[in-house]
Amino acid sequence: MKHIHAGKVRDLYEDGDTLLLVATDRVSVYDVSLPTSIPDKGKLLTQLSNWWFEFFADIPNHVLSTTDVPAEFAGRAIRVKPLKMVQVECIARGYLVGMGLREYQRDGAVSGVRLPAGLREGDKLPEPIFTPTTKISDTGHDEFMTFDDVVNQEGREVAERLRDLTLDLYSRGAAHAAERGVIVADTKVEFGWDGETLTLGDEVLTSDSSRFWPADEWEPGRPQRSFDKQFVRDWSTSTGWDKEPPGPEIPADIVEATRQRYVRAYELITGRTWSA
Image 1: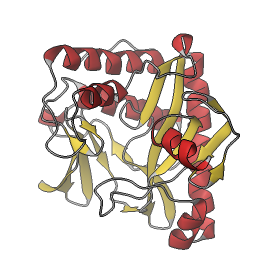
Image 2: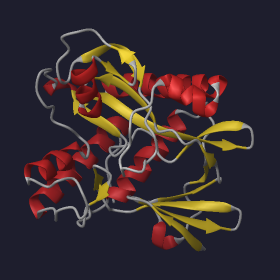
Image 3: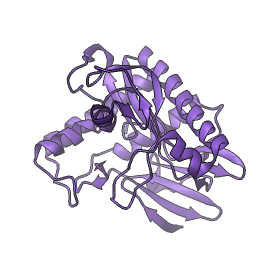
Image 4: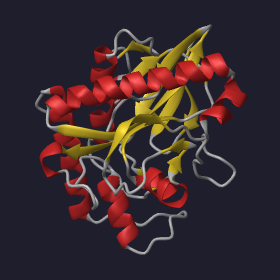
C-alpha cells in the first residue's frame, strides 16, 4: 500500500486500483488537528458512517468493502472506489447554529438564503437549507458559497443535483435520528465522480460531520448540549486558544467525556450497543 494523503482525521492509502480510507483517533476543530486523540473515535466514526451508507443504499456511494481491510485497520477502515471529488463542501442546515448563526446575525441570510428575522441560536429553521462552503481555502478555513457560486463552478445541473442530494440525505437522516431522540442540527457531506455517476464519498452523518443534540434537552436561545465534537470546540474556545495551529492539549476528563458522547450518538442512532 502507498500512503497518499493525511487529512485532519483520515489517512488515505492506495492499494492497487482501490483506496483505503482509514479514520484515526485524531480530533480536529476549527480546521486544526489537536495534539490529543480520542480513544476509539476512528472506529466509532467508521461504524456509524457504514451504518448510514447502508441506510442510504439507494444513493450511489464509494464503499467497496467494510471488511476487506488490513488487520491493523480493522473496524476503522473501508475499501473505497477512487472518486474525482467535487470541490464543494455540501452542508444542510435545519437549525441555526455555528457559522450559520454568525452569518445570519451579520446578514440575515446564510449562503445567500434569506431567513426570517428574530431567529435565535438553536432555533429550528422553517425548512432545511443548502449552505455550501469551499473546501479549505487560502485562509485555511472553509468559506460560505452561495448556490449561484456552485452553479458558476460546477454548472447548474450538477449544482442542483448536489443541493437535492444533500437536502435528501439530511431530511431522511434527521427524521430517523428524531425517532431515536437525536436532533441533527446540520451535516456536511461530500460527493465525487465515479465515471459519470455523482457518488457519495468520505463519511456520512457522523459525530464529526454533523451536530447531534439530545432532543429532550433542546432549548433555543442558548448553546445546546451535543453528542459530537462541538463539546471539544467549546472547551478549546474556553482556553483562550486563537484557533490557529498548534492546538491545545486536551485534558483527560475532556477526552473521556468526548468519547462518551461519540458512543452515545452511535448507540442512539443505530440501536446497537458499542463494543470496541
